[in-house]
Image 1 (tube, rainbow, N blue to C red):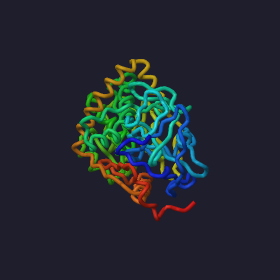
Image 2: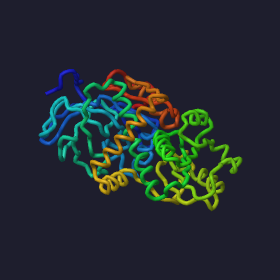
Image 3: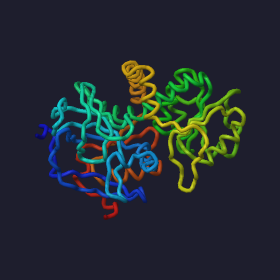
Image 4: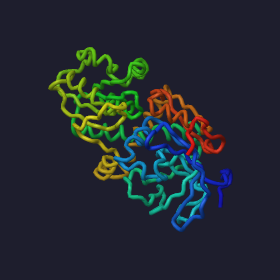
Length: 372
């Protein structure tokens, strides 16, 4: 039975991306199928589009992101974090109208097989990482639409910032930190937490973002990659060891940073992979896979204590983001396709964000998307 107030179209519509050419998209339509026992159908109320989705696509084969919402090759369905509402359910503990937050395809709705459901949410039947299989139950009483959007935009990325900060506090104490791709939302969240503990943080970014990041106030210093390449002494760090948290994955940046830091480089932690075409990513350093670290920290601290610490930190950055984060809503497939290509080439700036709302794919195809 459909939930009142949540109109369902005749079928399912989803934006698919050519895995061989991520700029090429199409809208795939399929009929809605009857639910089997243990399945729930959820309308996708809205989802966030950030540079993180580009990372999911680029690492889709290596880290299994294409398997989360399979499509017929060569097409793929890029995962995004969003809010969902149950429209049909054959799962005990999930009622029509219940709301959740979790990973979704860029679509009008999704049908999921549920392994376990309870008061905090449900776990999807899938072999992927636990953080990607859990759908957190939401209480939306009294929340405005803008508040829901901000939750969607910040929480999935900030949890990586949160565990990075806790890992730094445990293993490296007050050691200084250099963040590449400093304009990314995860890097900004990490800088916010580190600076709050008194850790000196240097941000490296493209020249067009330097002024914006300096204005945020969460970095001790901000340099462009060009500044670093032409004058390694521009990297003014206090004597002693430095940790590099690498969100860029660029061999060229690695070489320039290595020259600038010299013997002060204590650890190189690889988090993201946004490398430019033809710029091979360095193999050195420690691979930081956030879902595994989240699970380990939650286990060590205890799930309730971990969640309480996370919520407190999330409240802080959510309030702060209200001063600088502007949210743009897209409501048709053309605008979504344009926003996706912008995310791929880094065009979504550090103080901007994109939310796609329910039904955005129903209204018009992207005339610039390639046909099947």
